[in-house]
Length: 265
Length: 78
Image (cartoon, rainbow over all chains, first blue to last red; front, side, top):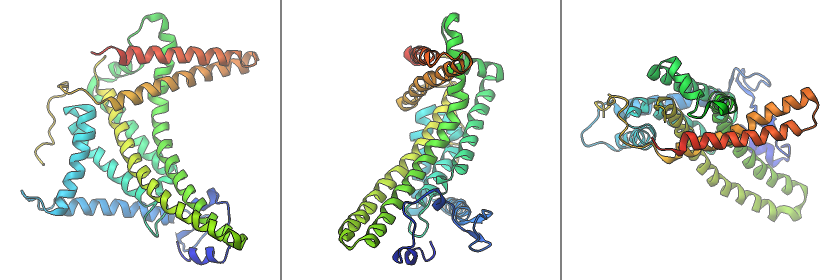
């Protein structure tokens, strides 16, 4: 972020980029290597939380019957998540979960969006810790919602024992157990993490690759321009991925909640 | 906007959940089936030193299990 362009222009940036590039120097203490108490990532997460709280407080403070522009935006976001995700996936019982889904969707969307906002240009979600915590929250939520709705015994019976003849149950129960209680949180976290990680990595490769070619050989200069054009194009692709992943995370959480609320099919 | 927070009584499922959730569930079952029984087969392989035969059997059984689960859980409408 700071003076990165100078480093690039002097040809000191390492190519190819590595995982090390995701570990930014600390802000407090300033510039410290291997000190991760307060980094740009931490700052961005706090910023995202602050922005969301202020945005929704400010827009919902004095709700008008004829909404103002800001109120319209906030209501559209909430309405979208409530109608198109919560109610669509879960039914009317899903309205209860709409506030959580909206928070989840907005938080992931905003933290993802940092990946392509100038001067931020890395998403906190490209560190697996953040998607993991989000996935754990969703995991606890859908198990808790299921136990609340059915009671513990019936919930686990519903989710572990499929309607099938007894002699294939030994084959099916391990699959049910793994897919519901092991793979769900894992895939939820890894899907978001890997998408954001790969997105940042691709942008790094094309940006730094342009500089690497420029510094290596004057004849490669036109190709390095091509590389930067690709960076711009891939940034648009990245935007698509950002929105899609925020949506997918929320939809899957809703789908899991729906599964644990559903009566036996 | 503030007054629609209270849900209708649960169990009132007059609208069918969208297909996306079912699609993800089906995919999860197919992959999980192969993964789980493939892993168990691999463990048996390590134990009995069968050189990959148990893993193959496990993966095929798991695929079959995954397909049965998809049919049973998602195939018959309630």
